[in-house]
Amino acid sequence: MLGPNEVAAVALGSVVHIIQVALTPVFLLSGIATLLNVFSTRLGRVADQVDAAAKSLEGADADKAAVLSARLAILHRRSVALDIAVVLGAIAGALTCATVLALFIGEAGGPAVAAMLYVSFGLALACTLVAIAAFAWEMMVASKWLRAEAAVGRQLAEPE
Image (cartoon, rainbow, N blue to C red; front, side, top):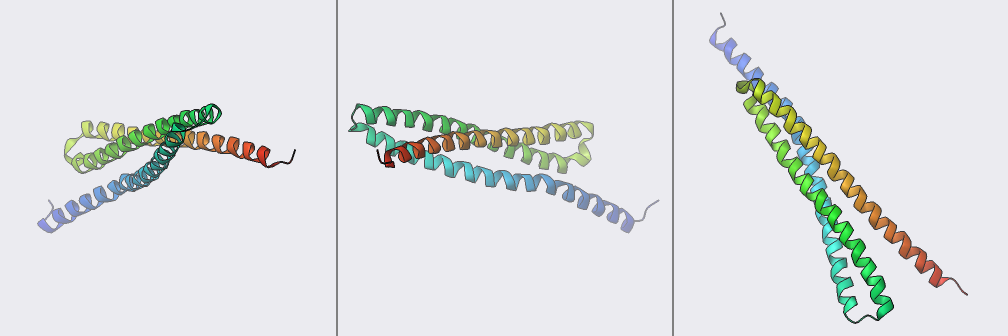
């Protein structure tokens, strides 16, 4: 039979282990927060570009209006990709928090909590991966437009 000091040492060791295990999802949560910051910053830049293009569209001739309309269509695709990335990142963050909570409850919860851990952390990772993929898609749309604008600029700058 264990004495009171030994029981306290075992309980302390158990709590320390839970805290150590809970740190992994907390680091993921920190990374997700950083991603959400990047996503929201880019979304703000896209919104600024939409405002500028919409204002330029008001007094534009037909040719310039067509270019601005194409620009607005690309900005729309970028904003949709960023919306997806933000929503999935936020869901991943919430699922990561649920994982940390389940880790703390897990000692008393048994197999049901273990299953919740697998599901919540697995879904958090999946949402994070898809959010990063949506962000990569947005970056590709942005860089494709940038390359197209650079090519047009080079053509205009070349002497005839």
